[in-house]
Length: 224
Image (cartoon, rainbow, N blue to C red; front, side, top):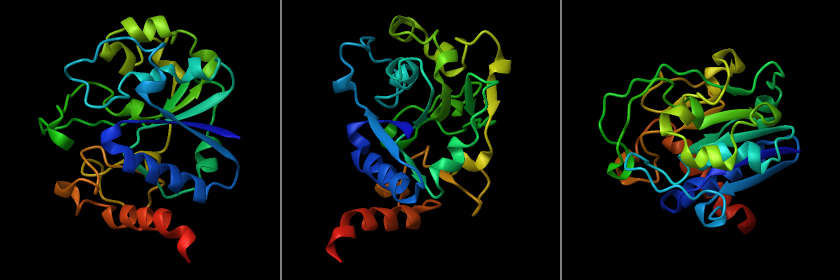
C-alpha cells in the first residue's frame, strides 16, 4: 500500500478532493490517502503562522516522516495538483540511496503574489518540497520539535539533511508547474502552483479542462 499525505487548506478543499480522486482512480495498487489538516495536528504542530506562509500545510508537510513512524516510504503532495498517471509509477522511483526525492526545479518566480493574493516568495529550491518521496528512516531529523522551531528556508531548502547528496531527483513530469514549466502534454502530475481553475482568475489556465473533467467524474460517478 502506498501512503500518500496531501496538504490540506480549507480554502482549497475542492482541490484536495479532486486530487485524491485522480490518484485513486488511476492507481493500480492500494493507496492510503491522508490530509495534513491543522485541526488534526494541533498537539504536534504548535508554531505560529508565518507572515509569508501561503498555505496551511507550508510546515506540516515536514511531519510526514514522524507521522509515518520513521518507517518505510511515504509520498507528500501539495493539494493544488492533478494526477494524470498511476501513482505506482512514482512509487517505483524510490531509491534507497536518498533520504528524499523531488523534482529539482529552477523556479524563479517574477510575480509578487499568487492565488487569493497570497505572497509569492522566491528562494533557492523553490517548489522542490511540493512533491516529496520520503525515505522516512533517513529523515529522523524531522522531529516535531525541529519542525516547530526551524526557519522556513531551513525546512524547504533541506538544511535538515547532512548532505545535499541525499536529495534524489525525480523526472519533471511528476511536478509540472502550470504557468512556470514549459507547456507540455507529457505530464504525470499537474501542479497549479499559481492558482488552479477552481479560482475564477485561473479558469483558463493550462490543464484547466482536465481538472474540470476530473471534478465532474468525481461528482457524478455514482449517477450513471
